[in-house]
Image (tube, rainbow, N blue to C red; front, side):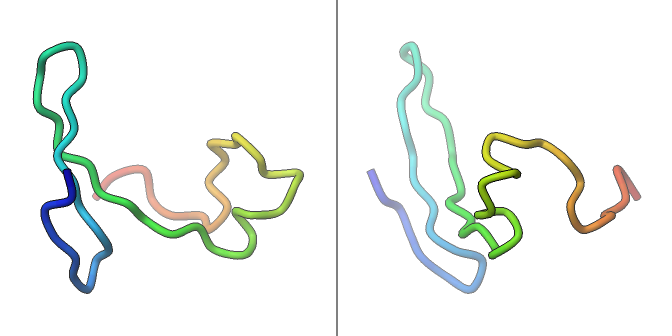
Length: 51
């Protein structure tokens, strides 16, 4: 069930194994769409792991 849309993208509420889960849909960038990056969890933009 979609619950909103804003500057950060669309959000929804899903049910997984009987538990409600908030999800945020984030569009992929062009580098993330490249075939060599399919299913990759690489840090393509050298973002810090935490702050």
